[in-house]
Length: 361
Image 1 (cartoon, rainbow, N blue to C red):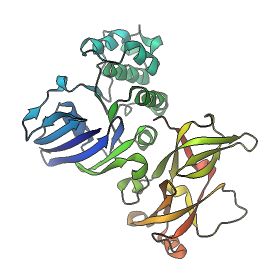
Image 2 (image 1 turned 45 degrees about the vertical axis):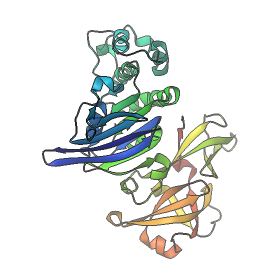
Image 3 (image 1 turned 135 degrees about the vertical axis):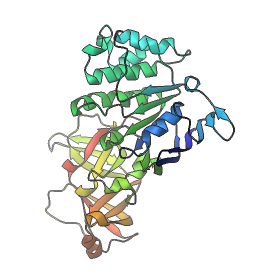
Image 4 (image 1 turned 30 degrees about the vertical axis):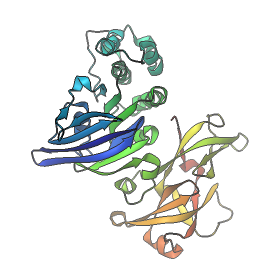
């Protein structure tokens, strides 16, 4: 099952040309700088913008096909919309705002009690929007969108107006929704933290064009994409918690077919996780060093080397048994170590440099 999007639209001085297909269900992040065309894609999928050329197919249902003369209006597309601002009705209580979504929806599987529990808003039901925090308002807005019984949830930078604390508060709820309801979600953002924590797939946009699209884990391990040239470039690998050692204050996780030691975790053994490994924190070697503080010395194979001339650096893709990750080093290091595709290499990764994220699927 897939969501297929093909659209071309000309604005004054700008052309949006976006083509991608992503699996459903799952959360797909549309990622790129401001002005890249991300919100235009959301508007077209929702039916709020009629592009010059367009074909949008959700699973087996054609929502739009300009060549075939098919254009389903917004109310017939069964999409739930969440914007950067909550857009709640100020004169209504929280529960009345939620029921508004139900009243306008056909019968469906998503119940009010389920949404209230998933979003942790039971204590807010009798309050008015002006008494809520930004994070609470967004949770209510998400709940209202879910109660419209959508076949597709569209979220246009839903956390952009929140501070760091409110973002941290709301992201676990978004992860719970993805896991519990098995909805396809298109999620616009330019925050890599949100992508790392929530996305299953990613669509990269720049200057109105989709430059790449695919599985998050595979895309973050590619040195030829714009993601790898960011200051916060990092590979995201799925895995699980394997063991805890309270005496050493370490936990062992398994990702990509290898074991890594990280600072002691709260998650139970067997819990799914995502390991985020910053490219700039990976040191490469051809021989195993001795008497060092680094816990993780990971054998791998060089898959590719991409030059990053702007940083006077090189991005080295390291293939593991089941996955890959990136290292950012100097061109001199590439030459001295003879790093070329197929060459064996050791990756040294500090335990404290690995960010372990909850890995709900």
